[in-house]
Amino acid sequence: MSAPGLPYALLAELTHRCPLGCPYCSNPVELTRAGGELATDDWRRVIDEAAALGVLQIHFSGGEPTVRRDLAALIGRASAAGLYANLITSAVLLDEARLAEFAAAGLKHVQISFQDAIADSADRIAGFPGHDKKIKAARMVRAAGLALTANLVVHRQNLDRLDALLALAVELGARRIEVANVQYHGWALKNRAALMPTRAQVERAGATVAAARERLKGIAVIDYVAPDYYARRPKACLGGWARQFLTVTPAGLVLPCQAAQSIAGLQFESVRDRSLADIWESSPAFARFRGTEWMAEPCRSCDRREIDWGGCRCQAFALAGDAAATDPACALSADHAAMLAAAEVEAAAAPPDFVYRRYGAA
Amino acid sequence: MTARLLVDAATVPRLAAHVALKFDQRRGQWLLLAPERLFVLDETARAVVERCRGEATLGAIAEALAADYDAPRARVLADAAALLQDLADKGLVTQ
Image (cartoon, rainbow over all chains, first blue to last red; front, side):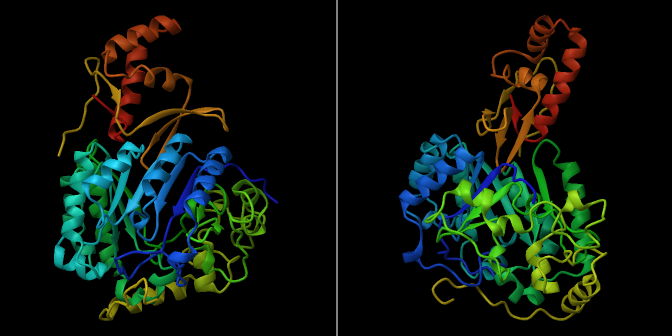
């Protein structure tokens, strides 16, 4: 069994509550109700344990993390523990007073999602009239002296406006732009046909990003999450299972990746029962796919096994039916052809209606 | 939209307000912490970065480093400018 290193980052999913209905929501299909969320003191302890374990970055996320009234207190605790605090938000509930509270508590960076470059399409994709609020909130973030990242989730229904989306992000003062093709886990898998781009769209997007990187050198950095379905090799999901990253869910479960609950048969443990360090070091679910010893062929003898770590376990489970299989995004996977064919068929057909994610209705 | 900072000897570099220089106790290394990312600094990089306080020009910083490390000034200046240009392009260093 591989000895665990130290985790660099903690994704703190404070809540699943969210006013948006994004069809590609990354939260699990089964949501935690407000009454099942960890209390403020639980999160304080998690934050302190994370810092002691070696975590350096904390990402306050959700759901929509700003629905938690104790968010400023938790940001303050993270800052006091020496963690770099990031807020990952839809921003539709942000106002100047709360932003000032967060900044005073030590927040340095806000990541805001934008669903499209034009309001009517953005609001239709989000299932919520939030686009104009997001733009105002982004200006507030910059006016408060905080760093801004624009998070742009892209798919067949907005990819053709990627240039306009990038221009919007730059105009709002984002120094960092994430362009992320949808990853089809959890809820997003229900909407795959409505979201799957064509290969031509994906190729144009790659060229758009390459040109923008050149044009925006020194002005904004673009992180690009490539689409798996047209890939030849998988991504090193989170730098490998349980190597650098952990997630704590609203209910307190500790996961090696935010989608890990989609894998049947893995038992995840709670911060209500064990310390974060205990779970990181000795949870069987963390050990299960850590390192390379769990791998079968073609990963086992592959010279990229410590580059991509076999790709995404959740995708292997969802598409190959086996979480220990090679990620079907890899052309060496026996399931790769079927994955690509599914993408091509869905992308060629007219998109079906979105199945929106509704907290409270789920 | 701001313009790209082009680092030269006259630049007065400082870390951006949202960037933190930190010693990582658990791993025994110096880091720059930035939005959702971190950069490990070797000894040379730390020596440059910790002098970027918005007070001295890069020329003066290179002068001081050359004296401290008994190294040729031109070489120190070129190396420090390359490092800071890279950090500026990532949004970590400004002036």
